Amino acid sequence: MNDDEEVEDDEDEHGETLCGACSVNYASDEFWICCDIYEIWFHGKCVKITLAKAEHIKQYKLPLMRIEGLVAVIQLLETPFVKLINFASLVTTNAARHRFVAGKNNLLLEFGLFWAYVLEFPIFLYHQLIICNCVAGKLFGILLCGTHSHAFVSSFTRLSSLAGVFGETNQSELAAFVSYALAFLDNFLALVNTYDVMRGGIPNFCAFALALNDKGVYKAKGIRLDFGNLAYLSCEAMNFFHITEKEFHSTRFGKINVNASNNLNEETLDALNKHGHEVDSFGIGTNLVTCFAQPALGCVFKLVEINNQPRIKLSEDISKV
Image 1 (tube, helix red, strand yellow):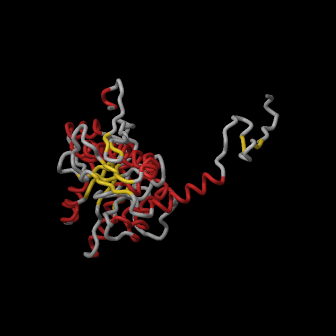
Image 2 (image 1 turned 180 degrees about the vertical axis):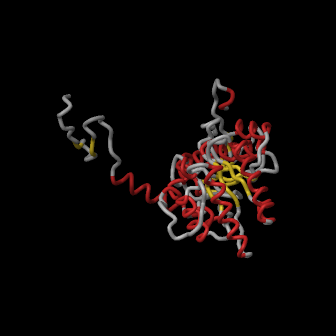
Image 3 (image 1 turned 120 degrees about the vertical axis):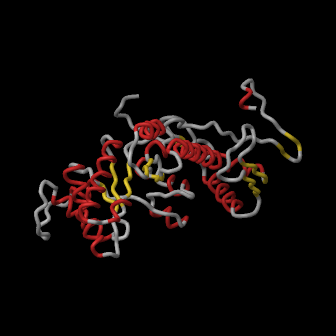
């Protein structure tokens, strides 16, 4: 066949469409009618599901889920059930491993919405986490976290409305902080390394944090570092806060939260703890939602009984029996 030849679709003797390129039957109208009937069955009480208790360590060879009901319906449910159990188990185990390495004193935040493989995934994943997904937070009634982006900071170009001498700080960055803080007066967490952390981001944050403190009602929550030497920068930032606290007699600066995120995984968390740092919370994104350490789980869905008669699949691979 030449590249410029068109592929024509034919009909077989039963009236079903055949693809000329691969000779594969498209589904007939009768097939989709049957699917609609099964969909109606799914809304009934023809399936009983028994689940292992959530958030508990599962023992080897013990089932995570048991499904009882009409065999045709259950076989149609195999794909969604295995998909949900496999990935959710991987992410939950991955989160537990990060929690263990980070230690009890550090807060872990979910930052994986950008890097999840599918848009729907982060919605059903979240349960008893502090997360960045607003829709999931609303659905499950859990705490939200997050900061503005570097693009938000760089979208500001001047600070002509504010008077004063700001030294070497980036005035457009200060404008971004002011704009963001006015929207989140009780939750001002600034991303401080868009330009220069110690000569721009931290001084700009402190300037507006002091202004909030003067009002006596609101207070700045903290900063976020998302690249560079996180151990060094967190220590330098905390030292700057202590100097500011002493200079301006503001006791609230001793409680500023330092959040860090930068493709963090178990190894980097362990290295930071051994090196020493002033980070209070870590945002775990890519390595949480992609399960980089183990991207696949071989969970299986097997028929074990039908009409009160036990069934088993035999295999030379003992792990699949």
